[in-house]
Image (cartoon, rainbow, N blue to C red; front, side):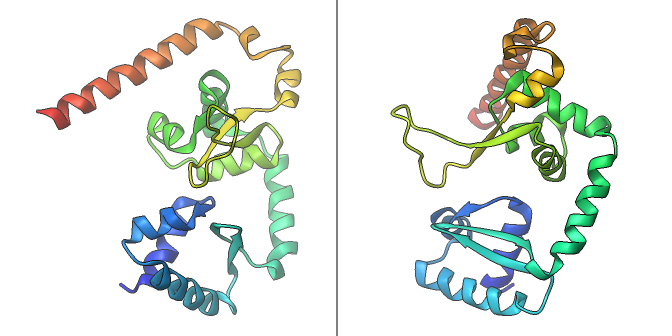
Length: 191
């Protein structure tokens, strides 16, 4: 498999922007090799329905601007439907565990949640935030976390997240579950 194909697979799997340095590390290549793969992938995608988007030091696979009308129609159709079980499950995780990374949501649910998260973002129920250092400056390549929006809390009739039903109890149970899972993983890899 070529580096270009591996890059395409990585971006498709990631489903969100990835820092160039992270992509380089994941693919085990030099900056020059990654730049060449990016150029080749951009050329390969130029006549297709996807584009390689670059924003600063991040890359993302997105739909082509020419597909905007189709995507807008599909998005509107999607928004008139109910959230469904998967959407409610994901929303609950974000409400009670947030801010939370997509990888954690996927782990808790046991399936990829990219589509559901995108749907919740489009609906304005959650927001994506950049991981921060303790001094408040964004760290490049650290990824994103998701948290509920003020609009969602208002829709649920709560002034703050702590007012959710049994918030402290559920949050403690989720943290206990995560701690137990971490302990089991450590034992597996430590033995």
